[in-house]
Length: 301
View 1 (cartoon, rainbow, N blue to C red):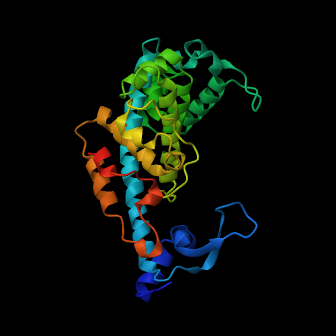
View 2: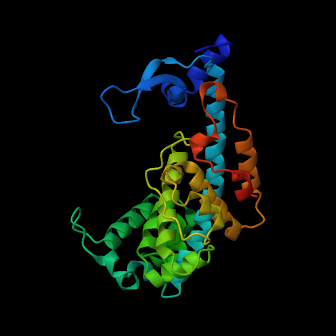
View 3: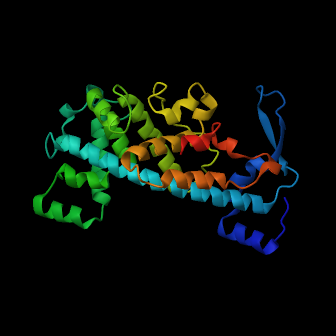
């Protein structure tokens, strides 16, 4: 690896750390076909591709950091909007409806072998833990004045993205569909929306833990609605390799932001960031590693 500025190079290693940076230079290493392995399987070598610079690694790291921050910006707005929708819908049934299993899908009340509890009981256990750990003054005030359980319009404020994703998955199918329609999906797509929430929770965890995002293989992949239901996702139909990349999740964020806050500049800021992807063609890295589709700028316009 070429280190043109030793002082800066030492600064990168001291501030960011060798192993965090190594995740970004991994794809800059040379490779060869693995002997005796599966077709297409690669063996990564210790030598770098010719022309690899430490500056390239740092530029890619900074790009990825900005990408994570931008993703978190959208996820915060999605999380708050979903919190309002869930608490309002359940709150119409009663202040403590979230504690009553009869308001959820029967599957949510089935006992799980792993714990001997229902999924609803497991969710309530996590909910109680979030309440215990909260240091919010309004939680303390309500608890001291009225006791427990907390009314849903108070309790919902401690729900994180993961707990809301699980709670949504436990709603009756009709209610899932109705909420999903509010986010621009046609009727009958409640389960598709539930898969989006699981995938976006995965994205949030990656960003919150400062993990590499730009070319990550997405483990919890979202389902796609029928073609035409969400046009920004149409280019991903039948493209398994692209569905496993983070650009699809960013397109889902774009779709949701168009319905939550149509006047937001988030999509323009995402386009500007991607347009500024560092020039790493000399080491074989481009935006294709993110899973972008042809004319991706038009999708985000």
